[in-house]
Length: 123
Image 1: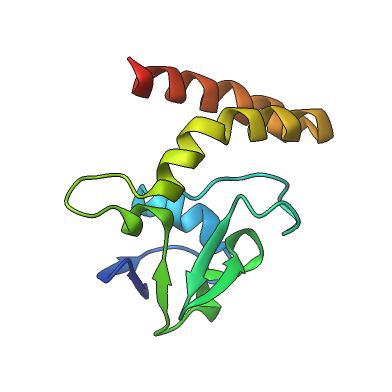
Image 2: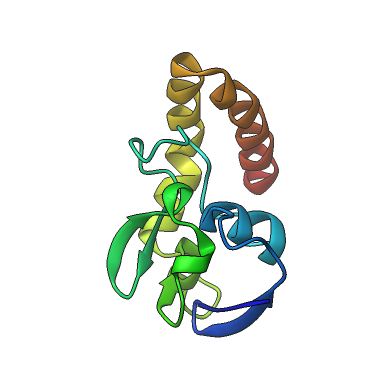
């Protein structure tokens, strides 16, 4: 088990220590705000803050996080109201995913998923 502090909440996750933090956030903990983009830490879609430092979570083995505090985009909302960064991601996220889909095969799959999710939020 690996102990993590995400958005001020403690989690114990049963994953391999070399699992990228991105996949732990999304698949194990269920925080889907942090996105997969390029997988090589260039695009920034997977950015989280680790002890206040912007970090590409796709390249961080979860076992190296230790007792550091991880902050994701989900933590920006206050009293149920979206932060401007969250709203911008919803509004512009689909366009960004389309751009990524032009750059790699992975982006195409995620672009379709992002468009579907954005459409649901708008209705």
